Amino acid sequence: MSTPTPAAPAAVLWDFDGTLADTEPLWIEAEFELIATLGGTWSEEQADELVGNSLIDSALYILNAIDRRDVDPAWVVDQLLGRVVGFLAERPMPWRPGALELLTALGGAGVPCGLVSASYRVLLDAALSQLPAGTFAVSVAGDEVTQGKPHPEPYEKACAALGVEARHCVVIEDSITGARSGNAAGCLVLAVPNRVEVPPAPRRRIVPSLTELDAAGVAELLEHADDPA
Image (cartoon, rainbow, N blue to C red):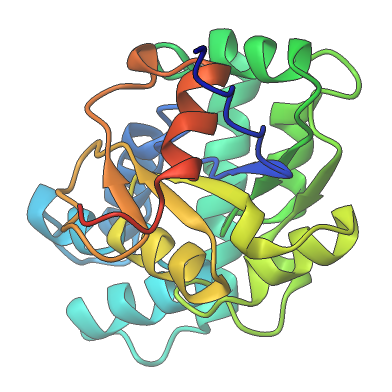
């Protein structure tokens, strides 16, 4: 007797920075540049503390760390964004290994994908312009939500836009903050760690690399989402 094929996810929702593209080094480069102009010092360890955070939270962290509370956090966000967008205009998009292949496989299987990021619309549009039209059915940027990750709002908004239930969706993330957001929304989270380790949790699976995933494998993981990790 043949084993039934697992049902495909209603949607797969992707984080951008560190998950779809390896842009975290660009953000860190921007942080070091900007903080030097503000007379502060910075470290890789401090930079890792910002992985997955909303941009405004990151700006507040930076200003507190370098004791520059006289500076507007929104200005810091604009400066960091401008630098990263500039880097991407000059350099090839650093896609994560296996990301484009998995996107293609999911598209071939008829699974809609969404892009859900703490980065602002200007950066997401720069990334989307380098992908075939329709690769992502929806995208939600960090400046389009009231509460950013780890709040569930970004993923809830993507699910609502797609007309799907979160429990039938898969989120792909690389950070603790992002994984918490996806889980809080009710999705299965596939955590693909990049710069930081992501701990296991209910409805969360740790995947070493996107190269280990295909459309059938994602469906299989969702079918067993509530099994013990």
